[in-house]
Image (cartoon, rainbow over all chains, first blue to last red; front, side):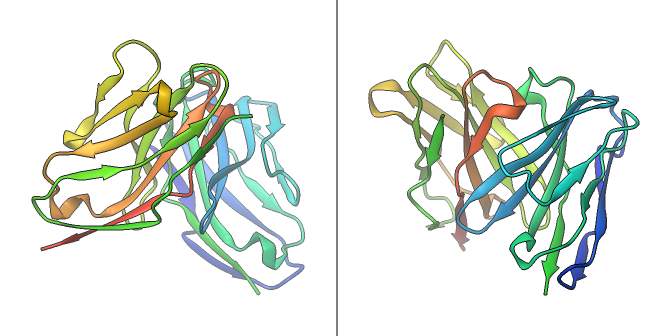
Length: 114
Length: 114
């Protein structure tokens, strides 16, 4: 199993550009989520999905869109990047939303918005 | 809502010395508590968790943590630190043990001196 994979590892954008961060898992997990990690703030939940076709907002959803068309993939879209979105982004998956101790994290994407 | 504080941003210990990383939480009822480790360039890995029962919990890599309700704390300990323990450590608290209601601390970076 590859676990949770994320692409790209690094990305530099200009303000106003759009991009999609990719996340995939091969563990047949129903629950997937996106976090951002900022210095001094820990991880904050952006969006999550409890299964294909179902998504919901987390703690800091503004400026991000998600969709979940398959169990395996959960892309995160930035429609118009802003410098405040400079961060490290982690995707995570779990068997279920109810089992927080089974959450697996991807290696992260470091995004810089100029 | 629940919250968590990690008072120490950076700790340096000598290899072979003991380690204690502090974590204080705020939540009205019995929380679900977690410690994660993040090695450089990697995603987060679960070290241990407390859901209920014995307040001293054992985790992977020789770590343990003790839940102290009276102090609202969940400090992480290791009797003898190895150079490979150098990483960032995150404490997290959840209200229901669900993935989508966890709150992470800002992290403590551990440096191990030879």
